[in-house]
Length: 455
Image (cartoon, rainbow, N blue to C red):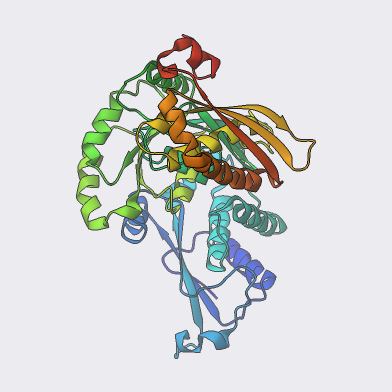
């Protein structure tokens, strides 16, 4: 049974959705779903208290039982949870924000009835184990809810949205981890060392109604070489023509100080979302007072705590981004739907080799390394890849090679394993270490390596 606790808004249509879901999934008759219509302040408070995010969402679901997709619901498995008076099992609560539903009905140019029914269907699927944390899960859930709504002739007409989203922040704050998480592919290398990213890297998120072009930028850091100026130009270039800027700071450092520092670097009319990353590494009790102070001074469109590493609130971030993207009455994609980055395999392989060097070498040496793929023979079996690894000094070359060539062998082995996983084929990788003295202060060398942006 469907229990609408505080309103009879479109109750007949909601009952049709409920009956359709029950029939489709062969659910027992003796179950109950509690549906409540709430205001923005109420759903914001629920989000804050149960999810740790201070924002308004359109729908929230709280399952009472743990069902997996495709798992049959048997009342006998939950005998202890059945209400002894009416002998009915409550499987969960659904909260719909009426104000947000009205906004979205207007945005999608359809009736409020359609939007309310869609959100209820979405909530019902959540109670039955469906989710949209990954692209594959999202596709399954979207297709299921569209099928149900279409069969009831109350489908949802969704416009197409697309645009550019630039991620900025200090070095080593987690930007590359985030873009890899959102895109679902490894488009940027990740290490615990600073200055890992040297150039803008594009990662493309696609679903049926959206394309988001994320731009990962180098981290802000103290300048020591001319290459640092080139990296700053990369950042400035990425913040010019963008719809949204994700300003990322770390939960492990004072939030207000970080925000003030990054705020001075942003001169753009784009929408701004402030992300507090690495919340999995600090306690909520420690973070909350800092968040309260930050919310008082941060003049941004949204503030969201996340964990890029664990994926916490990354689904919320995607919904946030989609809200602010331009709407098109046609399928506006900047990149083909099967492309997830603007970088070719040569570039990605070179970056993987540099990633392993950063992980295995100490001190300043790996920051003075640049890798160029000189040959990529795809027709051979195994695939043959030849790379030149440039460093700045002869003594650095000796360290990279290691005693009896042990270090370069380890870099090559780890790189090969990652590349094989990426391309799904066996690889013969040959790396040659070369010296290009002080190349990070040589504009011609920086330009030759493709790291210099023209004014």
